[in-house]
Image 1 (tube, each protein chain N blue to C red):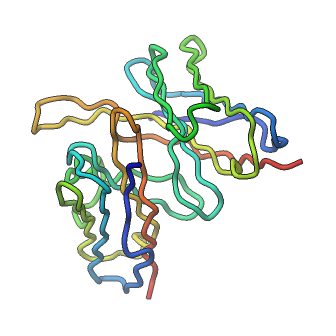
Image 2: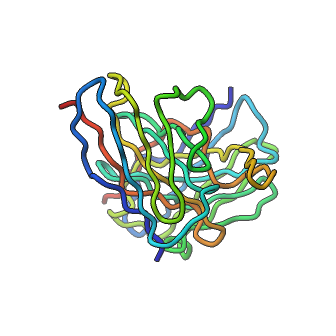
Length: 109
Length: 128
């Protein structure tokens, strides 16, 4: 069974700090099909990154994505107050459809 | 701006069928894939399945035996049916659109991998 494992489960940081979130796939995936979403409490998720490293429309450049194969990273260079939220990685496969990671909560320290 | 709105019962009895409809406004249903995604309270996201505007479908293998997704292009709606529900199916159910994103590495527009618009979500509770 294909899985995405995100770490850490919770990241406690202060505004202005750098956040590094990890997403590990159980088998190698195409970078073209790896994305990241942000979900704030009570809201639907929002696409941040697609194709592992491309920012979606309107996403600030403090958000960046990288990685290949089985290991992918979302980096927030300097946390703004509105960035404290839960982040999900997501992969698409032709037979498996969409698979989401378990999420990383970025909370205020 | 595309908007999606889920509608349907907020309470379903165990063993019965959950039925939801998503109405699309501000855009066409044509040329896009449309998904249902759910989120149990306090938990992560689970993809249920998607449908192309032509009617072709792809379902989560873990739910495939209980799921049917259909599309009504004349009403600009698509729908979800989930049979034999249990308390484990209690969740916020989102309808969503898959965006079109250009992959420069292969000079190809991807239309399936990523979600660009979401409905607000509707809580469905399974309880007697």
